Amino acid sequence: MPETPTIVLVHGAWADSSSWNAVIPTLQAEGFTVLAPPNELRGLTSDSAYVASFLAQRTSGPVVLVGHSYGGAVITNAGLSGDVRALVYVDAFIPDEGETVLGILDGSGSALAVADPTTVLDLAGYPGAPEGAADAWLKPEVVHNSFAQDLPSRIAGSSRRRSGRHPSSRMSRRPGLPRGRRSRAGPCSAPRTG
Image (cartoon, rainbow, N blue to C red; front, side, top):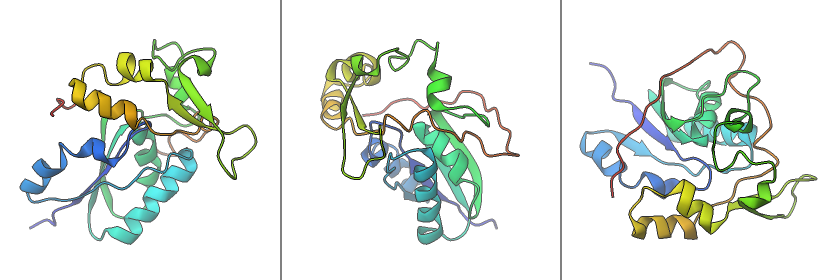
């Protein structure tokens, strides 16, 4: 009988692990061990290394990595280590080698595909930040109109209050899909609950 995989859920930018709260109990009721580590949101290379380290320290046996939005780019790279058996992309980015998240957004009509990022983001420096780096917070109207517009107001309000950081200088950094790894998955989305 095959070993049941551990499911590791990785959130995207401007979110935290609580974004998986509606999904975790259902998976646990099906008998899965479910982990939802923080995504550090310090850049794709660093975030992927963090998740890979988390997998090495917190899992044994097969793993299914699930990424939402920016978390998809993170799991693509983090999934190269350990006993990762599957990558699941939930409305997520899957950059090919050489692509960036911002490059994928360019021309997409996304609220983030703008010439001047300060029209949609509030920027704030942080201690030890590399030159030109700043945390980027979605402006409240962007959360309401483009990020959480389909959520019930009580959840959308919570999203506005915790629309977390993302390093503005790092969204355009490479790598995308690691060398030798080619994947083009079709779109996948799950119904929203809550």
